[in-house]
Length: 566
Ligand code: ZN
Image (cartoon, rainbow, N blue to C red; front, side):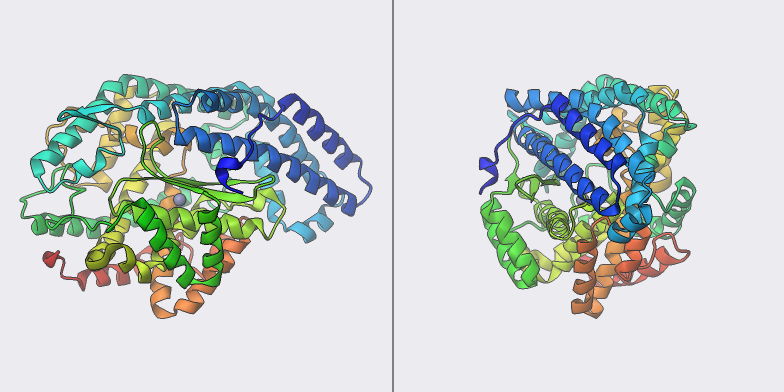
């Protein structure tokens, strides 16, 4: 069956509440572990079928945000669906209070109870309105981005299709295209800032209602983090400042030298090579065919997986007007049990990394869904999820010549350099949110100023060349995660440090690295982040000296490439 044939039907929230409550009562009254276990399976099944509808709806809406039908359905999920949080919280409370906990832990693992504990901490009926408000505000922000119309040199672009112009070989063109894009953000800034202000205040209020001092510990609990805290993350960021920022400053200098520029302006940063950035040598259909060959050669597991995705029409890859920006992978449970990959191909090298990245996520949930019926284990926490995706980007390196041909070495250089350059930016986004939620009453001007100060620490080279909006600290407004998923962003940084380890290990012993990778994928969310890292034979990014040690061979590899020839 193809994705286009998946049947969508709006779930009946009132009926679901009745069914969930009946299961909850039966669970509480069960007289054995076996009985509770059977009810648990039914609970997850019901939840899985309903969330399948939610995910079909979100996918179809993101593919065409102008489709009125799915717009209304998203509205329905945003406003009515949070009502189910109450009964789901009650279910986790009952699970925690189970007299058969030892037997259930033996069957499903201890981590389920850790997750149950976190889930009960993040919700009380008193914050329901707050959650609904968050969803609405996030949808408003997404709309501002998805429906962007940027008039530039006689044509109209959206935020994805303008990107190739921003990396044009013609400096004046990339300057003007970047200015046009940021003018759109500047024009919508008052709305975006108001949306964010409401989000911060709503989240803070919810946190206080739940007994937290501010939103930070609630944000961490929502992310289901169970084995590290804000202090450990702050130490981790300091390690990035110490060991990564100096390397990235060197990378920016050699980029300027390569381009024959005295210094890089913000609109030069995306333009890496005079001979042009490495590009895939064909269109979206061609890339999908190359990916099919790649995954059939990488392993039996990936061959089966990718054919499944391709035959099921489970990928929507090309950029179109009205389509949401970015890329993601989701899982459609219920009768379908299939991942879905969404991206916005626009002819840049990013197309290939998005494809391998999202395929890493999709491969993981595809594998995990065939191992467990516990929905809470379908995905691990996000930093662990990003190990699957970012490592897949590296584990597919031996096939990158299929996409990039003569540009392959240039792609390798840029892929690694880009991964390094990302780390400080990721930390900046994270530090910004810590400051914002520690000081929820900051004015918009103060927030923008805070972003500017953080940029100077993590991105000291950044030169906005007189662009007023950016010099006043507006850059963060394009970062969707800041709006929709507070504290998510550092997960990419933590995961990158783990993915670098797969890059190193695949060079040393490809078979063993692949074996550990598949093992990690199959575990899904059965363990916490640091336990998963151990299971995959990786070193914890929080360990003293980890970053310095891991980054050394990466920097050496880059030093070994004469980038002046690109
Ligand atoms: Zn990802």
